[in-house]
Image (tube, rainbow, N blue to C red):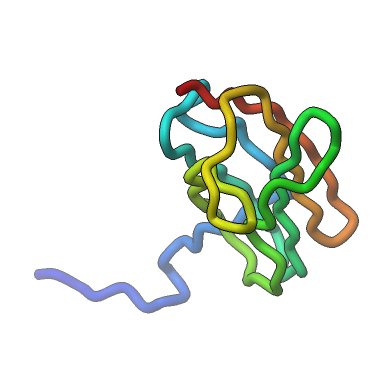
Length: 107
């Protein structure tokens, strides 16, 4: 005899801490995925920079619910133009958490 579990018995996927994971694939061409974890609802800012610190692309700038998140970057800038091959930095700022990682775009 099968029994349905109530929602309270189903484990929820809740991130235990803020985390920014390494993009995948890396190096990439033409698209990469950035994954991050939010243990609580937060205002999230994810930005891609070139090695001189210039903003290349604002990927996320909004409130998000807690959980496991991901976003894809297609190696274009804020104007929709393709960027040149090279090393880029991506930074997350969520609540008091800030982290930055490198990624490599190959053409």
